[in-house]
Length: 270
Ligand code: UDP
Image (cartoon, rainbow, N blue to C red; front, side, top):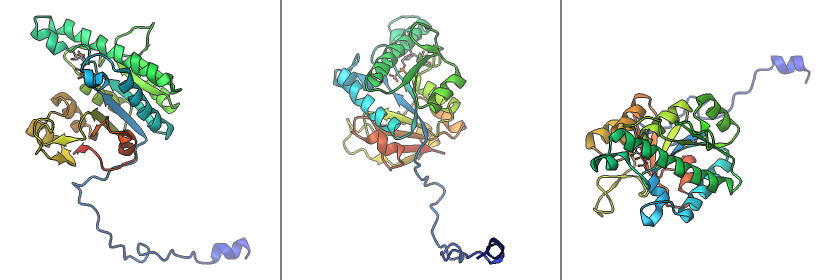
């Protein structure tokens, strides 16, 4: 057939139900949000997660396990930004309750996050994962200063970017930092890694009868006072429609599952 004939002959319609107007698939109701296969994620790791069973400091075996999980998702082509907490070393509020100046105590907390970030960077680089640490408080000998566009470029190049020193100001938390950086990096989701497999009606370690929510709205979290993230972080996510998935970091392969859109943990959304 010449190209003229081919051009004139009517294009064959696909013989599918959709093409014949018979697509009767029931769409999920708006409040059931489908999980996605994410391309760029922000992972929030609390300081406590790095402490392992000892409850303080850094457990190098735990750190190694976390690095393995991160390496697996990074290898699958997902761009990974990370915010690390510092609660395993120092918390501003705790210092303040013992009479310290709150702002000074918070700066100490921010420095604690830098220690954790360097430890995570080291664990990842030993596995051959390229990383950059960017700090909100300048410390040129250790880390790059936080520059949003530069951080985005690193992500595009496949480097794991680790954000240190929170937002660089006292009276904030690393959860709020995670929400903020996720938005600045245009991440599709904030993955909040915890030691339980989602959000429960009550603390499952103290109340074995507690049940897990598969999904919740931001308002549910705020109104029920669920201890997921602090209210500033939740509000920031709510105002900018950034979904949060709370999942268990200790379960092997969970990070990969969650980024592939499998229904594990609890999804918090609009
Ligand atoms: N912090 C701060 N500003 C920030 C982030 C953190 O002042 O933007 C301080 C604050 O004192 C906090 C400490 O750093 O208690 C450690 O961070 P966080 O408690 O969020 O760590 P996590 O609970 O995730 O281990």
